[in-house]
Image (tube, rainbow over all chains, first blue to last red; front, side, top):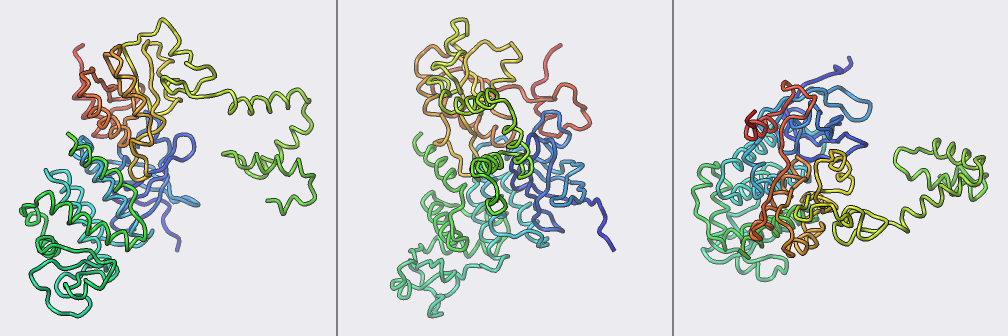
Length: 256
Length: 203
């Protein structure tokens, strides 16, 4: 039996690169087919009928035709364009970070409905959030959890002893927290404050609504970002490109 | 590549290899072009070679607007009749062509040479933004027109520039975003239609 020549799917556009004169290759994240690449013809022309329906960070319903190499998008209709994200530089930047995170962690053609839902939920939350950073941290935690990298935050990953209410250590290579004694001997571990640990523990096990209720000071916000960033960098063996831009944006706000 | 060409004279093999690097030129097209040039009159081949050499040797960036030019400052910046109080900001040199074709714009340009694309590692430091800000500091300029592409990166770049330029007290405008001429409403996406509604005009 041969596969049908055309098929439909929902998708979130997480990446796009230029192809030839007016075409683009899009990276889609779909509920049934996982991540896949497809060609969107003519989308760089103003009169393109696909145009805005296949813009980055858009949730669309697509019709695709099987191509020899890459499939080709033939029709597109927006489901949610996340306009509040696109109208705001801070949110665009964080949306792109989320997209890069997904693109970096998952391979092509691996069906993963739960991950699609996580991604969709993150973009929805980002559209509404006043403070974007907790949305990123929550998404990072749950993405890692789902992919099997859930950080161990309950007891020491080395000696299994219960963590004392004090400054402990976070070890990217151990994938979790080390107690004060074990962490002291681990050169790559970084200190993690009790507050940061508590927030991460809570976020690991609650929904967005509860996560949003936590009040986070700028220092704590920064610490959480660094802990997660180091862990992600260790797992991917590289820094995500969009982090440089996020840092730049934050710097400028401080200067004002 | 060179394996297949062991029986070919070295200059021929080399040209085939070089042509093969061009976009849209495969090994067969490269061979065809090479053998065409071999038979073509000498002056024609020389003219092509010179044209290619001049491309790199004679062209520079205009010291003012950073457009690609063979004379610095470029023809637009040199032109006395252009309105020096307006600067139109574009992503790439090629974006100037369609704007000039309209014959509606008489101001100057500034080419960013890229766009903010965080996931490709393109940030403001990679763009010609410093040069823009120093141009804006002499008081001639009263309006800046943001003509970056109407897509996610172009919008992000426009918003970022707006933040940087706003404190200078210069009027900042953005090219209108709406429906393309010759298009159908039916195919318009919601973002474009929302912008078109926001920007609707009295008739």
